Length: 171
Image (cartoon, rainbow, N blue to C red):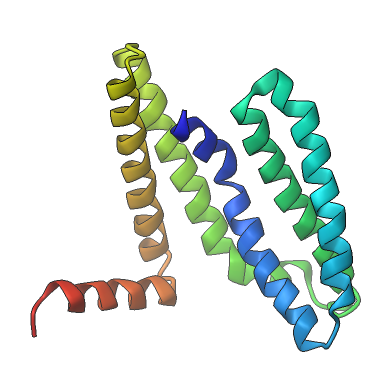
């Protein structure tokens, strides 16, 4: 159950990360009204989608509502900032986020592949097997995410790995 919900929610990871940055950009411009106003709209969208999707899709409907509302929030914030970006080439606006988007896509593909692949291999629905499938899918997705960010030479990933290595190896 958890893996399916995480797979549905994974694309929202980038949107929510970008939302935090854009909301803080609003605050830096001393604009507190826009984030609150857009936040209220997004809460309404999320609540409406939960009411619409949960009866049909159950917990996956709630996960999908979370994802769609996060993407909606991002779209509204980007629309708000388009005046600031007037004249800036489209790709230049999003180039910094591209490695994260690619890494999330790789993470989702790996997690889904492992979860559904193991399910096809051994279609047992016992709770222990579902927990093992979920854990393996999460591990595969996380490893793929780290590998993708490392392969794309994202400086923050390099710094995080160096920090982790320093903690593992005694001085």
